[in-house]
Amino acid sequence: MSRRALLEEAFAVAVAACKRPETIIAALPERPQGRVLVIAAGKGAVPMAQAVEQHWPDATGLAVTRTGYGGPLARIELIEASHPVPDAAGLAAAERCLALAESAEADDLLLVLLSGGASALLAAPAPPLDLSAKQAVTRALVRSGASIGEINMVRRHLSRIKGGRLAAAAWPAQVVTLAVSDVVRDVPEDIGSGPTVGDAGTIADAQAVLARYAIADPGGWSESVKPDDPRLATSSFAVIVRPDDALDAASAFLEAQGYEPVILEREAHGDARQAARRHAQAAILAHNSAERCALISGGELTVTVTGSGVGGPNQEYALELAGQIRDYAGLAALAADTDGVDGNRDVAGAYVDGATGHALERAGIDIESAQVANDAGGVLGQVGALFAPGPTLTNVNDLRIILVDP
Image 1 (cartoon, helix red, strand yellow):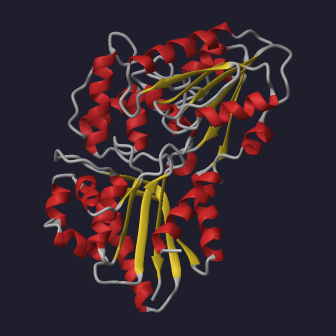
Image 2 (tube, rainbow, N blue to C red):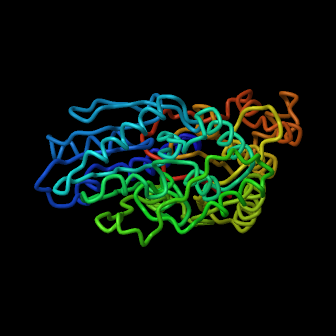
């Protein structure tokens, strides 16, 4: 097996570990006396809803997922919408989810299944903010280099469904949220922007984020539901799949292939290019020490977009890494988002090794110029380095692996 094939298999193993139906079924509460109403939102909405239908065939509700991430459902209705910038379909879906929550009675169970992408897929801007203004502020935040925590702080205060509002709408019904985490430290209010949990943040905190990145204030602010709100008394929240599950599965697989797994960073964050430089140093040190190992990292890196090219944080990481490990024949790496999408394109990331830098040079490509243009995806595509596995139907942050074969 080639090193590229080995890395892609490790990615597949990591993704598979994060979408086992038995994990969802084991976390389900007791059957309620009333109805089971399901709201599944995110890139993993369909397999999560399928697991519930397997256990409770009479469950009804809505599953909202990214366009192209759909699948067969029996009684739960499928809705596809845009991600990462919300669209009219996401707006309509959010309205229907709120109405479904409001219809819940005291003996019903509202089962909320959250996975990465739910924030964008359920768009319910607070008046007088409209969809176009919400789209504009989302685009600006995504391009600014802001962390997902900062982005979601703004989202929670420009919404009628996030920041505990969905659970408040369902009160006094029982609300149980099962989440697949796609955020650093598995912070509940950041998973899907916390539609069923209290939020200690304030409008002032959200406005400070926009000021920090010089983004115009769109107005339309509303305060989120606070943790001590009595309408949350019947609501519970559990993270059932974590980014660590992907890292640990990849580690076990690569160890079985003869590589010593080394977790560089479980929760890497910050600029993608800077992370690539750190990780390249660790890989070169291991190579020079004759260590056969796999350097693994998770977390979610960011990119500040100033150019007009195409790409995403994993592609920028890979391009920077290609320059750093040039001429090291024993090094090879895959950087990919576990949801199958990096940036706005249906590309998960890229594979690079010690020869990629030479391939780029032969194609007349200067790495630094490409990075300035934010065109990592464009140039890596020219040398066949992009990795596009298609929809994975889950999302547990990034997975980066550097194989070291001295």
